[in-house]
Image (tube, rainbow, N blue to C red; front, side, top):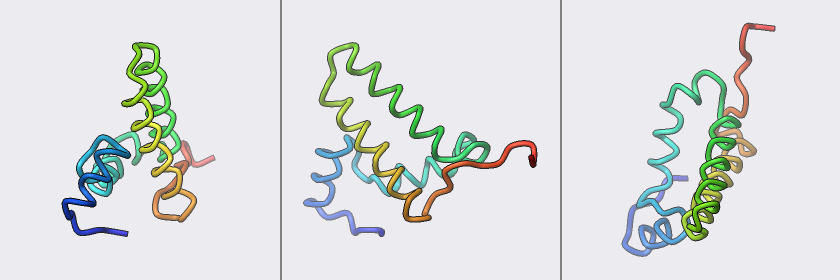
Length: 91
């Protein structure tokens, strides 16, 4: 669901995700080679790895935001808005 970027919505996105527009962020993910080749599950795995690295360096707040992005992607997969896995090799 696309939202108009009001000041309130922008502030919410920054607090929750660390980005101005989470919908734009996910559009960029859908355009990525990773998404096209293997699907959103690998993007989520990468985001979780990023969060682990941030926590290892003490940046718990940014790690929380990255995990929120990962959850948003998972919700899109559950809602059918993104593909979780892409079959590789036609097996």
